[in-house]
Image (cartoon, rainbow, N blue to C red; front, side):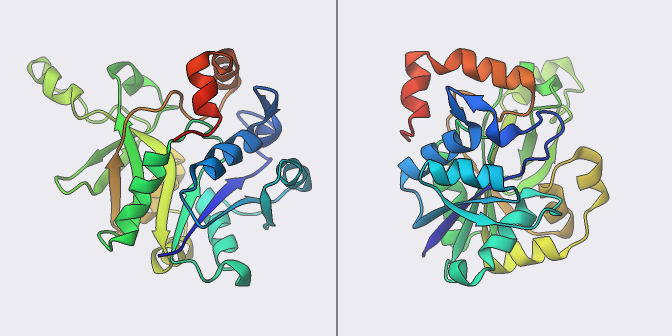
Length: 258
């Protein structure tokens, strides 16, 4: 099956203004994400999707293919759907959304999410990694819980699963999973997702995937090894990422190795 990766990047972020153009290791964040994803060779085509000419120019200057989109999309998935439905991208069977603020995403996460769709196991796929107890109380870190078949039950910024009884701590700690910023869709599921109105759960938690989950769309969750860093949403995240960028382990990973 043919696979298209779309990296959505909007300039209007509020927590980290001008986020796609902020520098990580001396290059715009969107360029770092595109470099990493393109080097994985995990898809037949990789395109950056943006609503702003400055982001488009930065990505194109680095060699990325760029698709311009409308500026009124309320989520990355809505932006990805606009691109996937353009005539030049209409022939791809599996569409993968790698969020434009995830410079540490690994190939296992992308391939694992896509495999759910390729095999027909679920119409949607994503990825998560074993999480630490410390991240549970951090609302910037999205957590996910799954059923026994690996299907997502719920995503939240709250600490899930919640520990009611201290005697169950070891069991709870083994269930903590951190969501990674990647989604895979078949075409029908992607178009169904974006046809739905924003759901109250989505608006409350500010998590786009809850729109699909609330509608009953099944999303498989691939469990992969923890990544070196998470998504970049705040000034603190960016400062930490830049402080780590010169470390040898991060330099090799950031260069795009799976």
